[in-house]
Image (cartoon, rainbow, N blue to C red; front, side, top):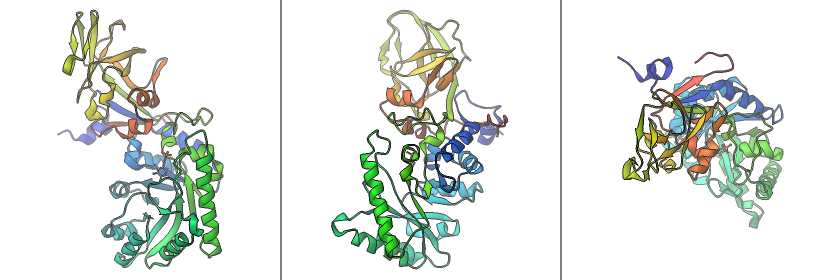
Length: 395
Ligand SMILES: *Cc1c(COP(=O)(O)O)cnc(C)c1O
């Protein structure tokens, strides 16, 4: 019997299309990012959405081994995955918490995010033995989750709510945080205003004698470009994976490198005449005789159908364009200009091959999205292959 585990770990039985995740590169990225903050700043590795598609457990273990202190996820199921893998580092849940999960979270050292007073009261009422560690979230201008800043009354209402959370039985307020909505833009005016509001609130709370231990605000862009957003802990996600938060953030001097590559192989090659229709709907009709290669990746793998007639892959160090529509399981490319292209040839879908590179940014641009969605959108059907260029053995 072959189990999926043999396929993922052994390497022998890998399907043609794999996601290669280089944990050595990840380790270097974590250390480089840590070096951007002061030595006393804690480091929270954001591993939500299966570590942006890279695999939460190996990524979390590598980040922790290279100096991360905390992990963050968005869903309780993601926190459970980390605990079931034996990872015992502190985990913060960014997302919503249901009252019946509070006891599990308290017992498993998972921190909840508190975004409003009603939820805090409900959680408190449901807790019996162990206290639940919580981080209070302040919405200083993201417009998503958190207690809303109330400048009209000098934050009186906000402070009252926060102190009420602090006073609730069973809840131990370990941290307080906010999230920046425009730190990745060249113009940092809004990000600085968010930080100013957060700092002001922290001052007001301190006057009332309340100073949560971990104050945090910085995503990757904040960590890289706004030292004033670092506070007690930084929370990088995308940069861990060697990707830039946006085209407006320059990561060229940080030494970050992409952790992920997507590779496949040509499974069939056919010589076709002029006028040959390719894929569903025959949206591509060959303008002249050429060679079409079929690649076993499709939208069910997270290879967006937006690549239809515009994607690019690499074969024998050369670019080859996607022709026709991307199917659920297969995509066709035109390799008429690539001498000798044959079944079994390596195809790089994302990453470097010889002198060419297809980055997550290029894919994002071609498919009208952002690099975050490119990697986080990859599905579980493609096995992740973990390599470690740092100590040169596969784990
Ligand atoms: C996703 C997320 C982060 C990480 O953001 P990046 O831009 O990937 O660095 C940090 N904090 C919160 C609250 C998040 O949701």
